[in-house]
Image (cartoon, rainbow, N blue to C red; front, side):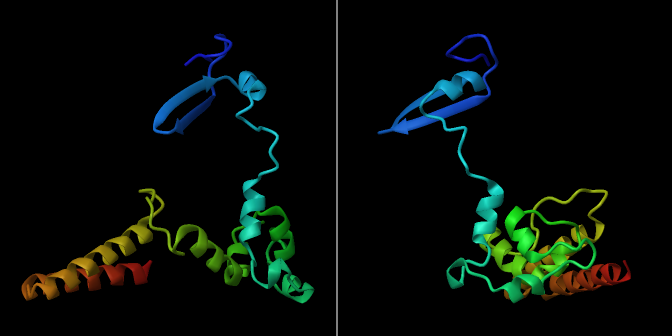
Amino acid sequence: MICEECGKNPSTVHLTKIINGKVSKMHLCQECAKKHKNFDFDSSFSIHNFLTGLLDNTNDGKLSIEHVEKYKCEKCGMTYGRFRQTGRIGCSNCYNSFREKLVPLLKRIHGHDNHIGKVPKKAGGVIRIRKEIEALRTRLDEAVRKEEFESAVKLRDKIRELQKTVETK
């Protein structure tokens, strides 16, 4: 799609306005969008600032020095204070080191602290089995509720079989 204003460059910025039920759309290139009043590209908004602002929102955002120094990753040396400043984790071990602080943050952002999205076929063997167990448990509860005990027994056995596979991996 070409920019509606200059008619030369490809449009990379798309604005949809809905005012009193009337929809208007604009498709502009980066340069024309910068000239337009509806866009603010020099905003100081950063996703990192947003996420770190969600951390420790108790105590009026104040955090004691000993609390900041208490959490430190043994592997990469990242401190919790540094994580709060940058909004980025240093390594995969930081998730375990900062777990006490990250779990409430993840629950606030996502509504839960377990991954429930898609799982890659090659890398997600155990995760896929756990999801299948969870689905089978739901079906088992439904079968018991409907008093379909023969199918409930089959589901129970399948769950046990899958749980053994998870334990061996």
